[in-house]
Length: 250
Image 1 (cartoon, helix red, strand yellow):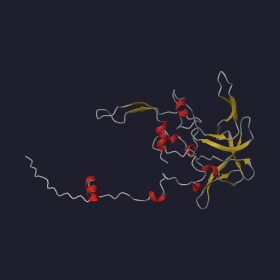
Image 2 (cartoon, rainbow, N blue to C red):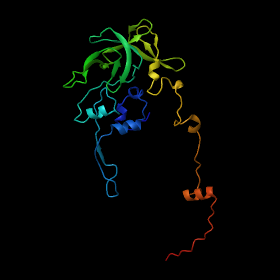
Image 3 (cartoon, rainbow, N blue to C red):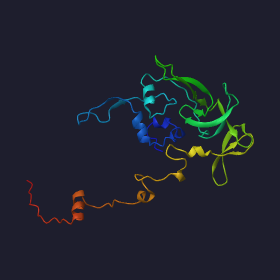
Image 4 (cartoon, helix red, strand yellow):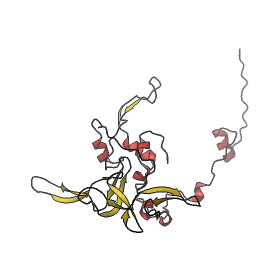
């Protein structure tokens, strides 16, 4: 995972894993340039003024909705740093606050930049869509984000009760989540491996434009002590038989 830009480092790995997009595309989609030096030897290269601070919401950073939300002055948002992210897509959790307190559901989306998760079918609010002067539109229920540090708790699959967890290592070096209440392992859900392209890596079928394993290790370039022109002449069987004229320096 390439994290050369300080802005890209703020985007959580699990938050963008489902989209399966390269970092270079996300960086290009997020970029908002205010001013840039013209091209030319008389201008200073790489002189760019662009937005450095963004407000992260439930809209993905590479979407047009995210760009529209970040047109004005960004507001200051405090986010508690989490060293070990422990909530993944497909995890069964119990809600600890709000009207759905005590209900259990499954994590559908992750927004690691704000420590948020979306629980499928829970913590919803009504939202009106398509409201015009002629039509009143329709009302739909939309899930709202929940804070992982205070609003939800992982469920122990052994007794389906909420529990705290800690990360431990097995004898073979495998890192697992363990319930602090029962000591049982909470396995990683299968949905954590899903992306928009495949359910699991093993079931993904290679496409014609994909780079196969055979092509990935094939070496097509052999370095030589010659110029590009000399290499072309050697491959085409062209021999240089011209004798350069003598030159004199005074």
